Length: 262
Image 1 (cartoon, rainbow, N blue to C red):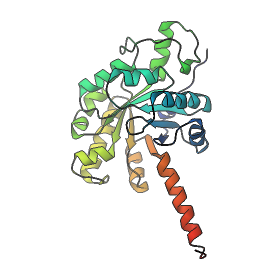
Image 2 (image 1 turned 45 degrees about the vertical axis):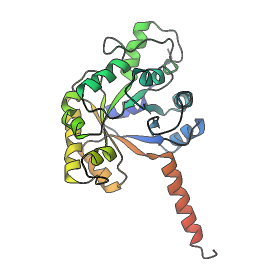
Image 3 (image 1 turned 30 degrees about the vertical axis):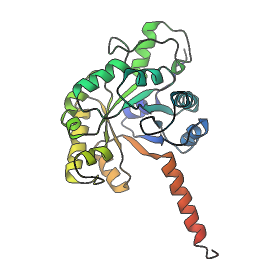
Image 4 (image 1 turned 120 degrees about the vertical axis):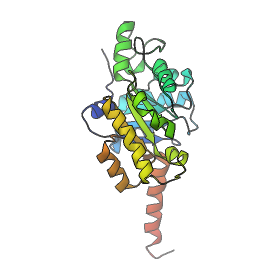
């Protein structure tokens, strides 16, 4: 039986960090292998803010399965077809944005996990299982175990409901989107503000209480990132393709301009 391991989940289960390479603007199998070569553990394929279509995202997911890096997709909304279609076509996990209530989280579980945990529909052989025609019961059990359902908390209401959301069977992770959370709190860009730190701490505590993982996105400052990792964050969005390219290109041009022959 061919089962592609969820490398990100395995690292998290061992208490290690899983580093994510966000794909938002640069599409195709090359960027998948570049992320792997740069020592990242998972792809954060962004269909919420990126312009890629489902077919492109699916092709990158299947490429990632072969490259040995875990493909995770942030879907653009809460409609069932967003999560179901990408899970049927290569993703090993989905990131559900803007979840603020227990009811929204329950809906995500229903859409992303097969019975008896949820109500995901069986769509036939899966690329994550090598397209083998397995018994339906095996597909459901293996997929539920290997799929990461990541709930993004991006509002004060979501933080307030973190404990109840983390308690749900089928939710694997609480992922704090610091950028939107800080903005919703009226603290735009103040990721180290005591109130933001306290909110992140609540999410981490809720995840740990219920044996779930904790994730973080939107924080670029290295010292602050270390602080959040020390608090218990293990799933980290390290940055995005375009940002990495811009940073490297700017650093190189600055060096060359500084040689004195402009």
